[in-house]
Image 1 (cartoon, rainbow, N blue to C red):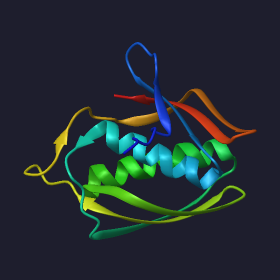
Image 2 (image 1 turned 30 degrees about the horizontal axis):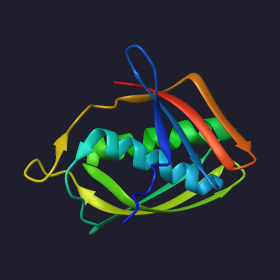
Image 3 (image 1 turned 60 degrees about the horizontal axis):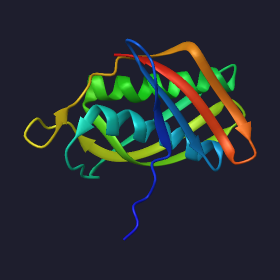
Image 4 (image 1 turned 45 degrees about the horizontal axis):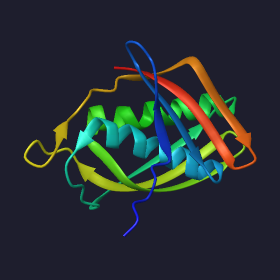
Length: 140
């Protein structure tokens, strides 16, 4: 069975965590940055028995991307929510997401690295011939 290539890669960055993420369309890219955050931060098997919604309205696509990452990290920090499935709808600079996932359980999960905040430093969100691509740096 062929392994599926991850839709993101790590960027060289001295103290923080840099990630480049892509998708065939904008919603794939937003879902893939969520996967990158939690696959980097958490190890362990995830159930899909909890549900969470996010609604965002921003001034720009870059702001929407940053706020999306902030919301994901906030929901983990405050509610212990780890998304595993994403249904995302983006229109202009508005986002609606319905996610299924799990709650962090120290008996089943381990924190590999604590990701704190997304930053605007070096932020890029672009449409290209393959779809969408973004680069983002997180404080760790």
